[in-house]
Image 1 (tube, rainbow, N blue to C red):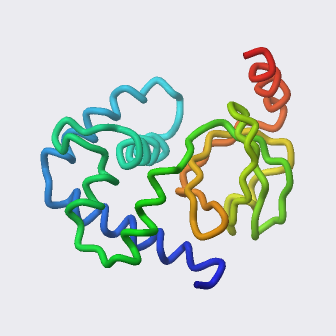
Image 2 (image 1 turned 180 degrees about the vertical axis):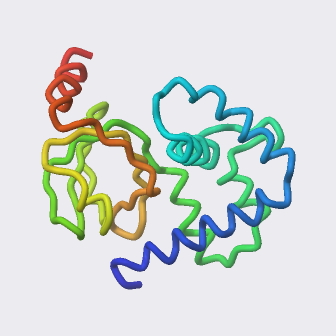
Image 3 (image 1 turned 30 degrees about the vertical axis):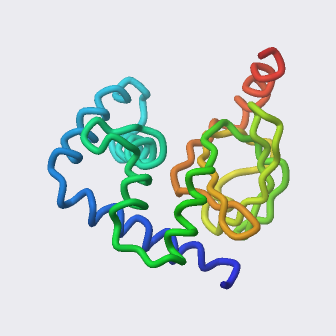
Length: 172
């Protein structure tokens, strides 16, 4: 596998998820009802939808499915063993507040999970063009081969807020 083929893998992943969800109106209703909890965040409707969908895929145990959407996909999806193996590792993903420690714009970054202190080598061609070293934000990192990737849903705080965010984690 090439280093940056994760984009194609993620495109396939979200296509499989969309195919599943589009045939389950009860799941679509459940996702829509969960969005109400996020209305007070002061983010755009698109960002809110993406955040809820990300949460629903990886974390939320659906009442309709009795499991997360990722678990349901692994169990019921029409996937070959290679994709199942890749997607199964996604269950080890982490959603947290990260600080960008090092950055190669358009290529990769090293980000530190402020809750655990663990550093992750993350390949990314898009977000790395929009953030700066020292900046903090919410990210979901997923294991992929011998590095990590992002789900595409990241919310960075303004650079001037990073100092206060790090202080909060030092006091916790």
